[in-house]
Amino acid sequence: MKCSKDDLLLYAVTDRHWLEGRKLTDVVKESLEGGVTFLQLREKQLDDETFLEEAIELKELCREYKVPFVINDNVDIAIKMDADGVHVGQSDMEAGDVREKLGPDKIIGVSAQSVEQAVLAEKRGADYLGVGAVFPTGSKDDADDVSYETLKAICEAVSIPVIAIGGITKDNTPQLGGSGICGIAVISAIYAAKDIKAAAAELKEVTKKMVNQ
Picture 1 (cartoon, rainbow, N blue to C red):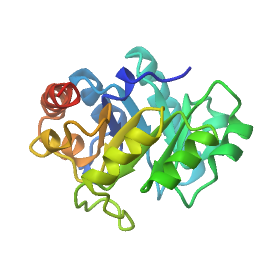
Picture 2: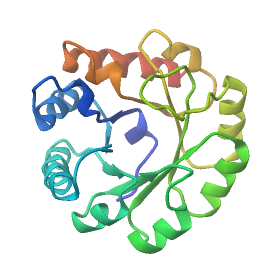
Picture 3: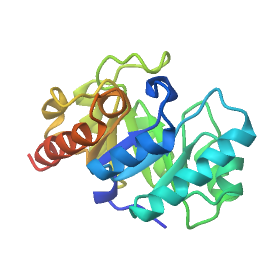
């Protein structure tokens, strides 16, 4: 399964921090009902067994909604439970090595902060790029800021789809118009909302307008 630009319009990244006693699958289901087009499971604190169980549940849910499902960083778990792909950062396994382990049919996303990193990731087999942080963010301590100019330059330098990530809300999404990105990746803009389904639906509409600017 490869991803298209349309699949990347509203890319949601999970975060247990916002669950407040709810089950992750229930929260994700609400976001899918609201129109999320791509899901990444991001878990830094779970043990492998629990992570695997959760990943399998979410994969089934994403299949129902026909939404691509990728795992953050953990290539072995992605292989074990047959996820649609993996997203890796610059400090994780290099895209070429990931491709070797996953095979030709899986989706590989790579985080990039510069044109050099972006070009290299494409050369090594990445299917899409996540570029950021485009706005200040509280969810990643090591996220370097990426200017609008750099984001635009990256989009112009590669032929694979690019999404923006980092501190994105429905209010600042329009500022990314004209950069060449095909979508946005968010965590709290959806999962910290009181009404997750409504937040996802609203964000999707705003993003559609921005992408078509």
